[in-house]
Length: 252
Image (cartoon, rainbow, N blue to C red; front, side, top):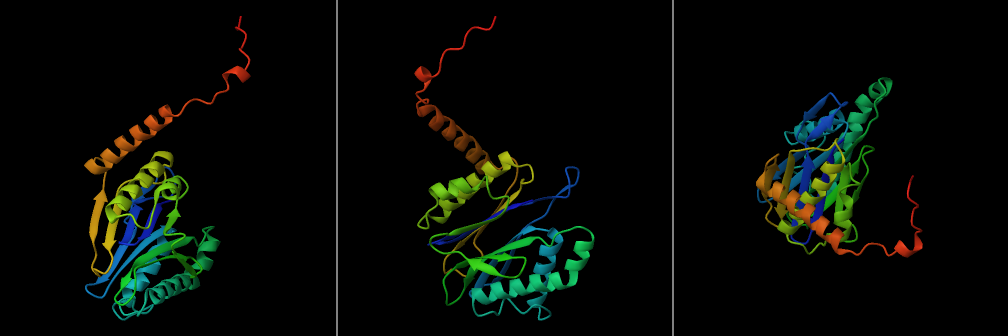
């Protein structure tokens, strides 16, 4: 399992992904799940991947070959982000055509998802979620973020706090809080965390950081967020139900 997040903000985009993959409790490995394609001054494209690692790697390899004029079109020449998403969907379909039956024979699902975000010169930043069938949806103001992989533990902080007007730095902080909550509750998500923040209209890759165990800012997030939750809990009065609950008789 994995956890990946993409946020669409007024100021740009924030991306983050963990690096854990496993095929059982005794077979855990680390793989980078963020891939960046860029043509400075023209476009920046970021892919995050979750699901069957062999499937997502194959699809991204087809896209990379396409940038060298071989297969699956050329995402560095596509005129819009929508067309890049179409090419990514077609890459999934090509991998499915070749591998789906063989996976089925060995009791493996064709299970994979991509997040695609970025900006092409002449249009605004955009964010897409691409499914294994090759279809996709686009983030809109009502839903300005996507999560893939192990999503449930990190979702509440976005639902409560995320605003499209947030600065990239504030949104990055919120994203790390979401990851910390997920990692604390699910062993299938783990460090390191890869993060990239893209500023609108720059058309070059932006801030990139890998957060490993012991990273000072991540340690500060963990400590301060934990303390804040405890203080908030303690500041709320207990449920006033004492008078409605009869006293227990002493156990003899």
